[in-house]
Image (cartoon, rainbow over all chains, first blue to last red; front, top):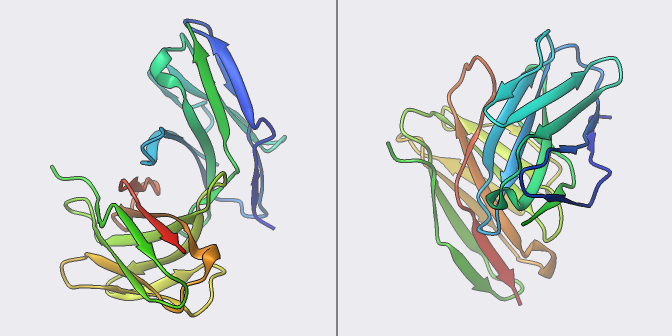
Length: 114
Length: 114
């Protein structure tokens, strides 16, 4: 079964510190994509970062990096130098090979404290 | 460059009624996917439209149907509404084929069924 698991319902971090949000996935496909989205209270899903299953380097986008461990089937999001505006829901998602649909996890609510 | 737009923003219906939600994809995109996000959960894939045809479908009953128009905009129709259909409905667009399956999301339509 294809599934995304996010085991942290909520996390909090002090402003300017780094935080890691966990994500594990399950798929039998060899080709797949992994995504992280941010969802503020307004509801819109904002794309943060992408990792392809064949990418050997961990993806980075500004303050976001994806710690991809293929053998462990994990794709953790690392946010460096947290900002108050980072407070939101964060969703890990997978796009199975050959398809365009996204399978989402249950999300992690991140609170950044001053 | 206009992003993904959805209408209406909010909607209140009663059980048994029918509803139509609308989505205009990001400029240049030809594929539209619909997701249902119940409160406190991750989005669930409903279906995807490409070239005016349903390309993929998630585990949703036939009460959920859709349409894509020649200008790539799309509608989601839900018949015989149930209380459990109350959710945020998200539309996402992409361009196929794509290097990776990044989907751009709209702000969503929040449907309340009373």
